[in-house]
Each structure stands twice: as structure tokens, then as C-alpha cells.
Length: 363
Image 1 (cartoon, rainbow, N blue to C red):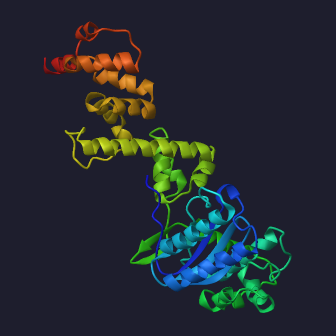
Image 2 (image 1 turned 120 degrees about the horizontal axis):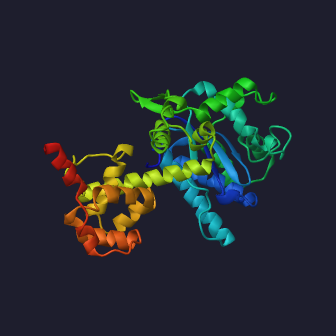
């Protein structure tokens, strides 16, 4: 399963990115200023506005509004420029960020005030400050601090370049996040979205109990389909009462099976089937059988790695071992992959079970 396509529509986005292994990404004041300077430059180049931000020592939050469908380009420039600056300054190598940045499209502007409050309250939750306005690197207080601090002129100008205080001014920060506001925030973080008639709307997901109502068929496929539907790994893990690591391993193996199937299909191994045949659980035995017959050494090795030696050997014994057309191949498979101490005469003496069944049916 390929990674999910990021939504890129004009509108509001909540962005979070953190240092790899939760490492520090802002070590001194100049680092914070540099990051804001990069945002300023990017806002000019890519035409967006910041409505709220909070720069913490090992991560940051941004609430921005795009005017073009260019979110990935915006964040790539911001993150890569700052990473180059940071690595050069501190003489380090390797990635600065922990994977791709996370983004949530705010599909209903009703939630914006709650989201602004959530972002601005980050330093208070982290016990860095006690009140809104005390933490220098959150936008609500940043405007106040600008008037009293002698900072670089370029950063001062960023106030009018990338920032928009419309939402900040409309939020009551004297009251902590209410239960209703938290629900609004959760609605953004956990909702699944789809594009309908060129508009982004909340997506109705198939309930997990429907995905897993017939686990005797294939739990692996059910997990894969649930993730395709839009569920997160941790949601599926919680429902099935298994670890997130287990879910990750299952998905990883299933993706490898699908990739192998597509690769071999494109090579023409499944020549007797439609060229656009797709992989699912019902094709498992077919995949193993055809790869044993027509795949190369590495293909067979991959099949045993992904499907297991027991299942592979069972398919081989039932579908291939007694076929006289594949004596040399069977000898290789038996000796190399299954550790059998046999000679070619062993296969010559076997009855072709398929042929015997056909004889019975036609007699």
C-alpha cells in the first residue's frame, strides 16, 4: 500500500513537525529567529499567511492558510532550508526531522478558534509558562514582544509579511480549552476526509466491526482494507487488542506480497490470466504456484520469505512435485529450499496426481 496522498486544496492547515527522535531543533534565540525568517521568505514566495504558531524546543505548530494548492512545496522549502541552516551551524549530519510533516486540512472553519487556542496553550501544557502572552515563541505573545524587544529589522517586518491576527484577536485566552473545544479539535485530528465535487468533506468510514466480521477469511487483508479506508494503525490495533508494532509488521508483509505479485504479473508470469489481475487472499496459492513454476531463484526465495516455508512446500507438493515437465526444477526446489536429499529418479517415480484425477473424471 502506497503512502496516503496528502490533501492539497486551498484553505487552512494545521502543521506539526518534530525533531528526529524528539531531538532539540531550536537551541538558542537565533534558531527561532532563523526559522521565522525562513517562514517570512516562504510566505512571500508561495503566498500564504500564518494565523497561529508555536515553536517549542523539539517541535513546532503552524496554522496557515494557502492561496494555492502548494502545501507540500511550502513545507519542503521551510523544512529543508532550516535543516541546512541547523546542520551547518551545529556541524551535524543526517535528517533533522522525524519523517514527513503532519498536516490536517481544516475542512470546517467552525473549528478554527478551538485550534488556535490548542496551539497557543502548548507552552502552558508543557509548563514552560503560566499564561498566554508569557511565551515568546507563540504568535499571540510574539506580537506583544515585538514592541518591547530590539530584534532584527527583517524579523520585525515579518509581522506584516506572514502573520494574520484576525483569529488571534477573536479568541478568548482567559479561559482554558473547554470540553466542547476539545471535541472540535479531535474532530480535525481524527476525521477522515474525501474530495467530493471538488470540495473536501468528512468521510463516512465503514465501521471496524464490519471490516473484521469474518476474520476466518483473512485478518491480514481486513487490516489492509481498513487502512485503505482511512483508519490509522493505532485505531486498528486498539480494536483488535494487539500491539501497534504487530499491525505495522502485518501491513509491511502484505505490502511486500502485493508488490511482488504486481512485479511478477508485469513480467508476464501469470500469462494465462487477465493482464490486470490484482492480488488478494484468493490469489495466494496461485501466486506461490506460478512463481514456483516460472519465477527465478530470487523470486522463489522471496515467496518462502513472505508466505512461509510450510505453505510454500504444501503448494509445491500438491501442484508441482509430480509434474514430469518440471523434474529439474523440482530437484532444485527440493534440495535447495526444502533440504530434501533426493535424486531426479524420485520425481520420475511419482504419479501425476492431477493427471490421475482427470482420468477418473473422464472414465
